[in-house]
Length: 341
Image 1 (cartoon, rainbow, N blue to C red):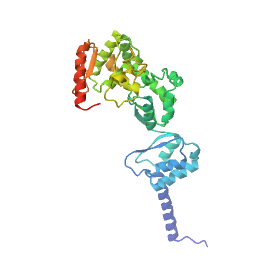
Image 2 (tube, helix red, strand yellow; image 1 turned 90 degrees about the vertical axis):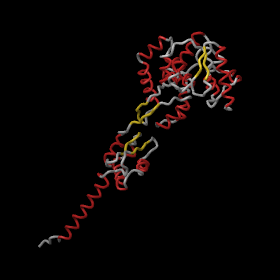
Image 3 (cartoon, rainbow, N blue to C red; image 1 turned 45 degrees about the vertical axis):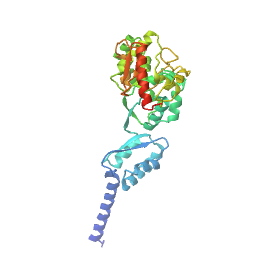
Image 4 (cartoon, rainbow, N blue to C red; image 1 turned 90 degrees about the horizontal axis):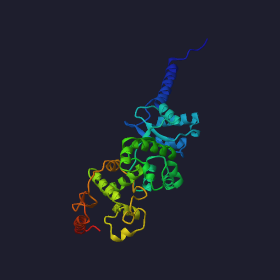
């Protein structure tokens, strides 16, 4: 006669099954993250399944990390790593998180193009925000062939960048990033801005060049159209721009607080004391406020300006050189009194 299992054996088996199911639920179906807010990891081209797990470790529960390793091993994830920025939501389980990581369902990043003074600085910024090598970016932005592919040269490539905020993928290639910047540039200049530039007899690149100088002259956006009007008056009159920021750029010394006479003799196409007309290109990535200041310049008769002696960041404007010398003397006196050299 067949022996019927005792109730204690059945109860034990059920308990073991429930524990197993509980463990499976805890590892695979419970919330992965220990945080109450979404966290992010960045997977680059050098990552492996093990290194991805290590990047997840600060955010995941022990059982969920074990489940991730199991899923990675069973699916052959190590042979199909996809780069990108990936979200670790607060209440998502490991199955969903792993599926997103494995299938490359990454999150975009928001990047604001800075008003960089040099392309090297822009390259450094991009490498901190995106999966781009700063050295490679800097070299290419100084490469004439690469710049020509974008429709610029090494002096005007800064004109391509419009300092807005954009959403891109963290692992975007430089080629695709530049294509995106070209698309945003064309959208920015389409229509009214290009029409206004043409009415002034300027190209968008020339507008950006003037705007970049104005941006370095003042941070006061309200005054920028006045300064734009003065520089346009000088261009129309065939006078040198005599813009101190261009001398700083030529010397590559942006910490200068005063420009002395011997500096004005420095030989460079960017020295607007020695050369008439515009420099070869912008001295920084021009701000939108600077660009619009040129396009909407104040029409006035002033040909000269000098920083105000109150260090307010604004300027005294003058029609004649004699009047300008008086303004310059007051400013020089204030610099000396404050020990600014």
